[in-house]
Length: 309
Image (cartoon, rainbow, N blue to C red; front, side, top):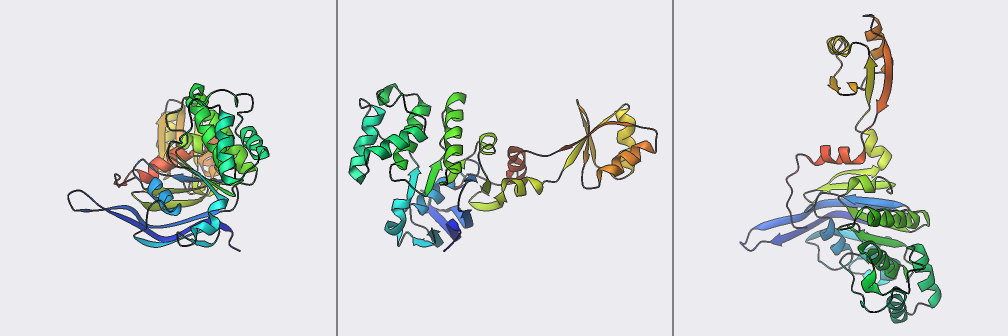
């Protein structure tokens, strides 16, 4: 049995533009999403995230390549695994004058799910207590959480969320983030498509970053950030002199309002020894690591974006 929930190989999607030219939305994409936790599917708007998701769900055809869900080839055998997959890809349609519970109960009856599944879904997305309010009175964040609840009625093993925090205020973003974190911890595998990196880093255990339809990096969040290396914040009484001597010793050094930032490709004790040799004494030596957003921006800076999303 495969330990990958989602697997694509050489996945490609081409579109013909109105002028007859060829646009490549997804370009030879190898995507591997492991079982369990939250996997970020990250890229700027227009990088091919939604197109990839639509192909996985059988909503768009691939030009080339293969796709598997739970080790099963899709879309050829999608009906065999569809019951294990929940997805929020587009704005959901709910009856505005029905309550949240009524909307879910109606959906539950169509798939043969019982009241217990409705109760569990509402509890998971933290709408218990507001479930008898009309849908039209819900905030955007509550509407998005109800959409997630709808996908949970069939108790899926994989949940695919495409930009679930788009248009939400900070409170709504926090609500969705907490819901996603809880789902990942409960054993559901979550594929989270987003371009809001500061939020993603707080919930994801692994991530794939794409640009212009191509994979740029993939791995656990810790692995991705480790590839950026470490820099050090250096505090010293005479920053100008310290920078001069460190650069003379071959260190890459920059200065900001907080002091010196020194490249960490060499051991930290070499920094202190270099400065001590010139009677400059270190008052601070703090390792600094980039966050996911900085890593992402550095990685995609030279990408030419704008492929069909």
